[in-house]
Length: 88
Image 1 (cartoon, rainbow, N blue to C red):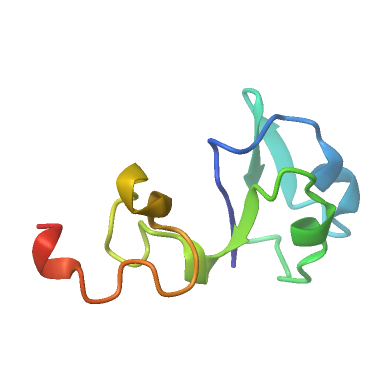
Image 2: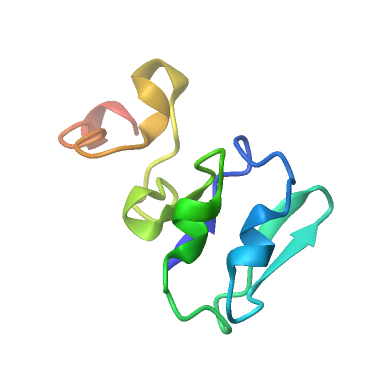
């Protein structure tokens, strides 16, 4: 399930054009994904020039952690593992 990393999204709309299911729209100046329409084709991942559309495996809020800038933003493989006791 993709999600939009709002700090990276510049509102260019390239992802909207790439989505075959019309699951992406603009909410204000940022992209938003309708999870009910999304078929997880991942075309938006490669279309986004900012890398703002990410898989759920990289969503820190779904992993139970808030992103911390001093730790690389809490994104990416391996970041945050074993740190739960320090982040509470």
